[in-house]
Image (cartoon, rainbow, N blue to C red):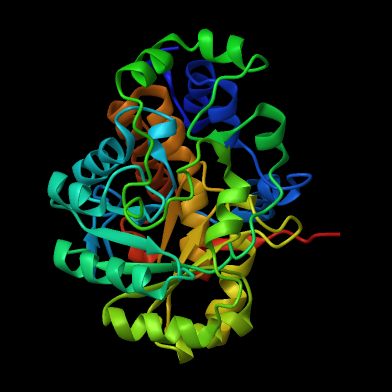
Amino acid sequence: MSLKRCYNIDDLRIRAKKKLPAPMFHYIDGGADDEWTLRRNTSAFEQYQLLPRYLNDISRVDLSTRVLDSDLRMPLLLSPTGMSRLFHHHKELGAARAADKHGLLYSLSTMATTSLEDVAAATTGPKMFQIYIFKDRELTRELVQRCKKAGYKALCLTVDTAVAGNRERDHRHGMTMPPRITPSSFFSYATSFEWLFNLLRDPDFRLANVAHRVDALGNGAMGLIEYVNSQFDRSVTWEDAAWLAEQWQGPFVIKGMSTVEDAKLAVSIGATAAMLSNHGGRQLDGCPSPIETVAPIRDAIGNQLELIVDGGIRRGTHVLKALALGANACSIGRPYLYGLAAGGEAGVDRALTLLHDEIARSLNLLGCTSVSELGPQHVRQLNVA
């Protein structure tokens, strides 16, 4: 299946599975425990109906919006995802260039395999940096200063990873960082010819933003869960989040919340936006899907925060449902990573093109010409027994 014959995000997922060694694919594709939350993130969209209105002039369509002080060509962000070099040698730079081409905001993870300075130099589009509050607070402070100097528009604090989720697929398929070929995984690596060739050509999997300060991988390959648990600070509180917001003094996002109570606390410490997220179902299994949390949080806090739905987006109609329920934008992780694995920068471009066309088409079919027109009159929740 060529990229041109990938007609939706699931087609890109199928192509990615064929391209990647099993450990890499299942690292993208998997979730925690029984993966109930992973599945629910997408299936929950099915409990909402879109309510089209007809005989409207839809000869024009405008998908543009403004989020995080950035003008975007459509209400979509690229979520921060760690270690993109695992999936394609174009790594974070390929994804950032595709986002720039589509006029979207690209989010870079602290755990990226490309430095924040290199990503900033590669494109002129808006960027957000995703950060953790490490045990070493000076490392966190240093990253903030580097982001300011490099011109990042927003800072995003992930709050749901103090302890790593139980991602059993990683254990089952032998996922380590950096990748390690074992007897049990040899066949999977050996048959992923293009990926293996580029591994031999460019074996650099360093965590580029923290490698100079964090040497967790200095003794060789280690499990990702062990890495997370060794570096992240379980004592972080809302006071630390307030300190970080003060350090940044710009658009500040809390990523990982799902409750009204946490949304109110985010407002109180100076956040300007919330990414409603459960880490793609990779942390706590059994928590609500992001789409289910939008309306209650919007009703509780009004317009005090921009709300970004992060998780489960696979179709343009998913984006429209989220906006109609009160979100300002949506954010995608797996969809563009499937594209990256399927074809590097061109694959990410294909993923974003598909979603753009779906959003535009569905918006017109809904009887609207602009995403700003979307509201509760366009969506209805099904009665759930």
